[in-house]
Image (cartoon, rainbow, N blue to C red; front, side, top):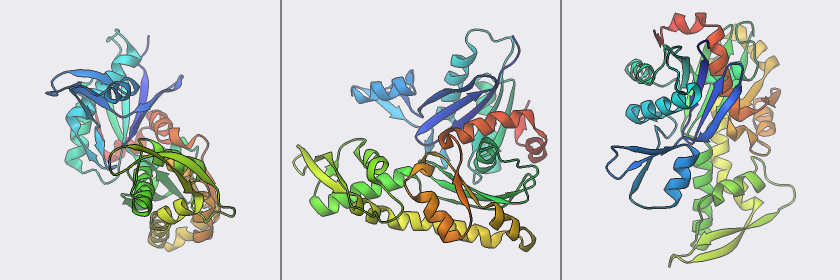
Length: 333
């Protein structure tokens, strides 16, 4: 059995793992549950989410906070579990592993992530910036493209990057992602009705009736909430309310795209405007977002195929073309 090539996208809410030749093999909550003292790992991923939901004397912890902050001890334990799940008992041919990281991670933090991955059982560990991985996973020919803007919309943050000929020309990362949209919806309901939405309801609302544009026909859905006395209550939430609640955050993403474009060298702007925007990440699926961003930027815009998996897939695919990664010296063997 030859060494496996594994790409890992460790996000705020989800961890996605891509294995060359097998495709996406893990798509689960980026969550780990330990005993009360944090000394023993009890469950990881989907099993951890189920265990945490039962309550009891356990600790539920995430390796990535707000899209950027990383707890390397937790990240290392999670990566170790994932590697063990994928390669099984055989340890002779240790895998090559590449992880995606936010571009804002410092050199010291990058080294810590690499060392944690090596301790987790990797033969060789590499890092790649999330926007570059997203572009590769979206099947953009990053080495030859003369200019494109990739918008990776995660749970904790959004990365906007202009890419040409294998390099990031301009970049902005902002702490606006799916979690922030959910929080804005919850806050809007709380302010209007004095109710807090039940667990998972803000995301369900966002997926079913959320939109980056004012809805043409206002619709509503019934959702579960909790009143001031802690009792369950049902309420109706309209599409117009949701659009109003998330309007400012959507505008912030559009403004970030504008700023990145202004930072693109003048000789590349025509190419970027011609090739336009590519949206990746789970947030790319917000209704109307691709039309909103394309219209605001006055560029063609599209959603990548299987946008949630783009970063993980691109991370794994990059293992076959390491010149760019090695040039940045973000690896350990």
